[in-house]
Image 1: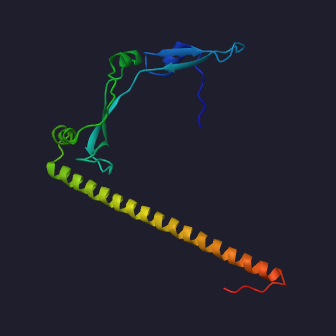
Image 2 (image 1 turned 180 degrees about the vertical axis):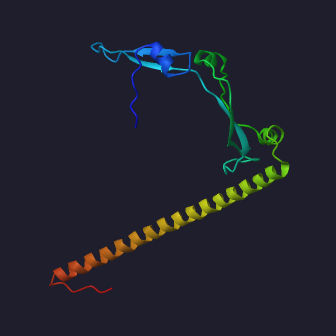
Image 3 (image 1 turned 90 degrees about the vertical axis):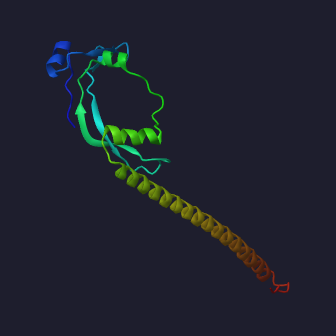
Length: 177
């Protein structure tokens, strides 16, 4: 792990980085501290990745959308500008039609490939459901067997206890089962 060297001034920071827009936050952890701690933020570098046909089985309807390895860099911007222009998005879900349109019209993925991916996701999802149901049945069977085993053990322990009592008291006749 490499050790970071502290930056003492803004001029040192601009020499260490090609980012000219810097935002600094300064705080002191306690009143007796002679050194103030600083955190600096430079420009925001944004990459836009390609979108490809995905294989996520949790997609209920339509084809899943995934990020591909391909990307292109956008122009770097100052953090203040980014924060001012940023649009807060609350819902990241897309309808199946929107995902299909993005893949086909924007990224040029053929309809046949999209349909094949939808079919594959449906098959994977059905397989996962079957596997989960089998697992649930196995768990129920196992717990039922454990319950029966405990009951048998309890009966056998009670039987052994009674026989032990009968053997311990010599004056009484032994009970037979």
